[in-house]
Image 1: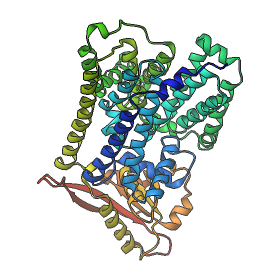
Image 2 (image 1 turned 90 degrees about the vertical axis):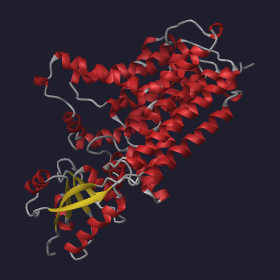
Image 3 (image 1 turned 180 degrees about the vertical axis):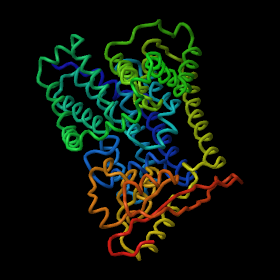
Image 4 (image 1 turned 120 degrees about the vertical axis):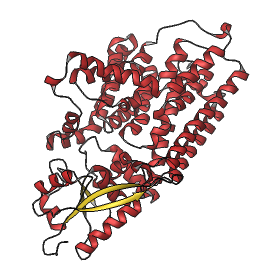
Length: 499
């Protein structure tokens, strides 16, 4: 007689299933509607993803292509670019919480598993930062999916789960190159543990790895064809080796590491409050992280920090988006607590209060403090620049917009023509575009400074001197008006009178 799957029974009988679904619904609705009604324009990371997706290439000038493809698909489905990226970002967060909680149910009791997911509401990557849909936000979903399916496959040996792990791992690589650190950590677990070595004697882990490679292979071919273009983006983030001291290579990873405590401060506070409020008799003693939890939740961050130090990268604190997802689970595992029912209810209310507090802060920021990233009317600005194009070229089709990333992605997103981007007016960056095609169609060049625009003229003979557009904007609750200065010019199609 086959023994029952105790984990499946635990999932089926989970008393928090309804409360968890309600929380996911509230979270998604809250964080979709809040930016939709308080921002005048989507974040530039999100419009950049939409501009990438427009080309349907197997890569971009910075990252693999999947984040752009999904943004474009949601845009086509919903017809509204802002709603598309806000909803997509929160779907990613919801998926992340689902997979993290499912893994947690394999290690801790349902109460701890429930709060291991919910307390991530206090980490900025899972609340207001997810408004800024980008490769990091998509990794929030795909990395936990790959880890969960891998874990279940390792526990059960089921072929379907191994294939799901390979697919999810390949999609994670197709989202962001640094997601490879998670796959490397899982490989180490396979080689270093008895269960892992047992599974390696079967074909399924190898087929999962092959599946991940096959998913990633078209992007790898694209990289080879275009001389590994995204590496230039990484190089832009790096310091000159000669200028970077040994202490700098230590200080930069340390800075990134310490910043994560601030980014996850509310999550840490929620856990500490619940743990300390739990009666001593209901608290467990310290235990070391289990091997798989260590490899999934700690080791990848170590790899990231080591890469930053060894390569001398000038890193962003937000590179650690997907690397903090197992923090609350690790805390609940290493320092277990069984809070009484009344305390659980208070913890749930407190989590909703954290959600509301972050949301209130974001709303006030968006509505009361004037910022170009939030309060510029994207559609109106795009329409004004489109009118300048039409007037200058006698209504010729608007097919290309080039120059500054923020401006280019805004026009590519908000105009119905969806002009194709020419990043930095540089075909060494936008390698998939043909110069003859761009010149034949003409291009609108956009910059934030005359110096930047002059660099475009050096690359494109015939581009006229810039005109300046002063675009006023302000937050709805602010009396202070700001000006966004834009320098633009039009390289007209051959045979069409220029401006």
